[in-house]
Image 1 (cartoon, protein in one colour):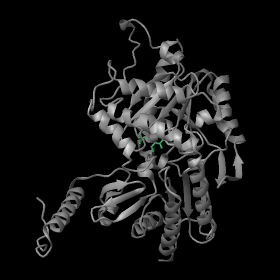
Image 2 (cartoon, rainbow, N blue to C red):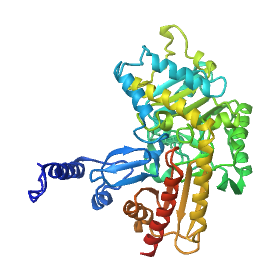
Image 3 (cartoon, helix red, strand yellow):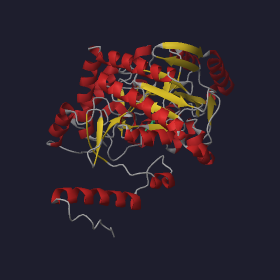
Image 4 (cartoon, rainbow, N blue to C red):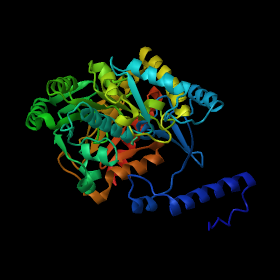
Length: 467
Ligand code: PMP
């Protein structure tokens, strides 16, 4: 049972309750929570931080301390927290129905969202399968692609070609086609066969491209497609940015060339826009920006602007029609989740789309991106112990010892994590990837908040590296 602090008698009642509530929350968390992507031994040794509420770009803990949400709550938040219009859309839907299944049944907000997503996607992506997270959006694309090839009499097409360092989620299918050995290597024995190609490289900061090379990656992709021939079902790619790999950028235009190869070798193109979709790079969708029409488009994260879990997999009528038949044909798509297409999430997604279109059309998002780019570049130029990449509202700042970019601290020094923990003292909630600091703020972060972010990040990095 919980042991509550006994020495609080001199506090007023409200203050006493607040302190006790905080203690309870901490004890429960320490005793029962198992946090994802977290070494719990390390977590249990760190000062606890429980976020109680949020407004705009800020998160508040139980003591009223506030922190700038520099990671948009795992890359989801678009319009800030506690947004009045999104709240109103949610409440309006709540008064109607919180959940009703999408399995063989529909609801008005789900139907409308499906239509809106096909409208913003490149022509031809007319069918939408909802789910509830990015991994599932990708699983669905993989399974629909496999089943399509079976249905059209080409069951030999079962191999997926992915990219090294790619990340598509943590389920077995998505681990199989991803290239994130640090996260998933230990599960390789249970994964299915997939070929991996080295992705192209691009160094970009504040709109300036300093290096790019896509030729060798394209050549390798073509070689694999030619070698494997009719065995290949699909190519899967995170267009423009491999976010979870540390914001590894691809040259613009690479995507179009991948699309051309996919058409030439008759394989499906699956685009995972779970991270880059919905304004993160300045437009609603990267594929639309590049004039590419994939066979499958996977969306999640920013779809509900960081409010609720919802994902979508878009595909063509051609794929959809291969699943039609009499009941005993067994051609139905047997994949669905209990909360697939949840109406509350769909209502928020519709309102968020409307707001995003306004944000983009007004030019405001481009201005914010320009200011963000200047800030990242300034931080990188400031000392020789760091370098940076940035496109849109996504950036990585790599820290390394001394002036040698190829050098690294021993893993257990946890320099990136130490910077992030120290950032709390300076009002920043940061998240590292090893010794890189990833910055993915809400799309509506203000100029003043960006100044606050870069001033305090510089302070935090300098102080941590000095110690
Ligand atoms: N694809 C990409 C590109 C992602 O960034 C992520 C999550 N970081 C996923 C898929 C998986 O999404 P989820 O965590 O919602 O399953």
